[in-house]
Image (cartoon, rainbow, N blue to C red; front, side, top):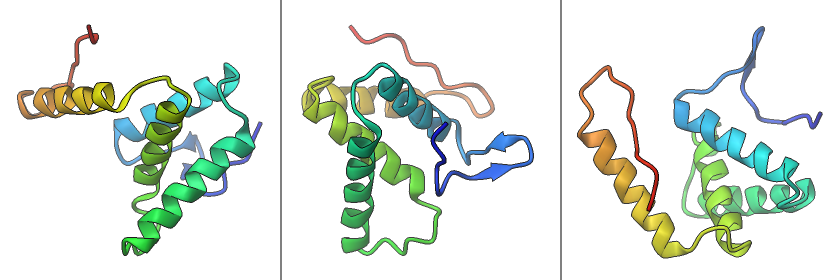
Length: 114
């Protein structure tokens, strides 16, 4: 198994600050396992996302790591033609709307695209 240098862990395994972080993490692992990209290719995208964030002033103290992970996932998905920018932006809008319209304490649900 690949050792993830900055993956937050406790005695029970990986921990995440929010469910979306775990989802993004799992998507990358599933796409890699399916052969969509190599691990060195993924590492290059993640490094690029981190470097871009640092250039924009990210303090790089670890609290934005999964934001970089998500940015890298979006970039590799677009470059591999798994999704287009329009579709990605539409889905982001759908998630924001679902989040804003979900009562506090309930799970945010998003219907399948289409």
